[in-house]
Image (cartoon, rainbow, N blue to C red; front, side, top):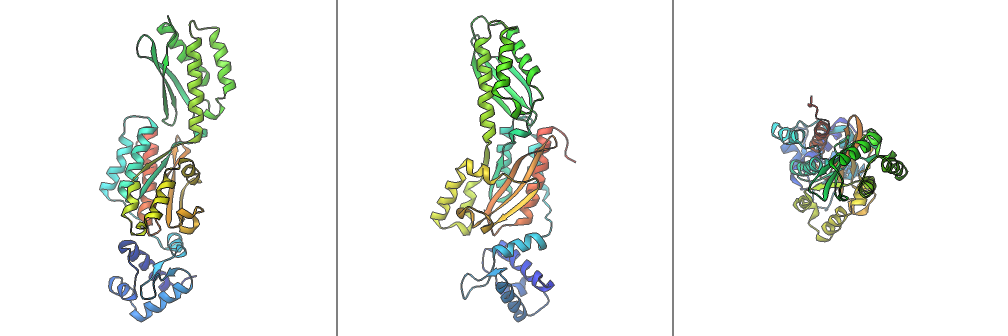
Length: 345
């Protein structure tokens, strides 16, 4: 266990380094933080913290910086809650005010807002397919040979496909098709809508709806294509350019490798598969070597009371942890409101 004085020194070093990106010396701490002891005492405490693995000295003549272990101790034991400003809350509340229920629109906006407020990279995953239920199927007539099929889920996902209409199909046939698909599939978890179930619906409809064989096949194919795509999931990213603003990422090769990783959506999806709640992964706690100069802070969001996806911020280990966590947790509530349409408390 660290003594109270060592805890205060470590907290001050983290605060100073996050703000300045410069190694921190004992004189700086005495000057800027009310620690109530001499420079020599602070110097000794910093030497002890280095020996214990909480601080590092990048150069012999330089001050000290927090190590991954130092940041971990800070996050777990020393970090104080951060209060978002009114303007930050107003920005995040824009999500709840988005009138469309299309998940793409909401989540793309969320990733951009995350990057804007944090000044790091914002990442948001689409709702997990096993948490979704189909709510309705609609067919919208476009012209005499084309229709738009719309598939809706309870977590705001909307899939659309343009389809070619069979000759002589009547508007009533289209309404019956959409109504029957909705009747048979509405309320079912997406993971239970299998090709076998769609084949059953297809056969039932062939017996009851005129001139619909081609259109039935197109709707069934659209459903299966959408289910396969949804099973993979999607990552929405904002602010990748913010990496270039950080002093830690002035090495062009390091930046190139990190930006290349951010283009690998399957890897990001795996990285962002998180347990419910807020998680902080610091430096070498990340398994991927290219990520070991980075921190990933994540929070999950729910739709209709069920865990749905992940919000995350990726940046250097020299991160304003308290602020990022507050942003993520507040945005989680905004997303839940955006998808449910309920007012945020």
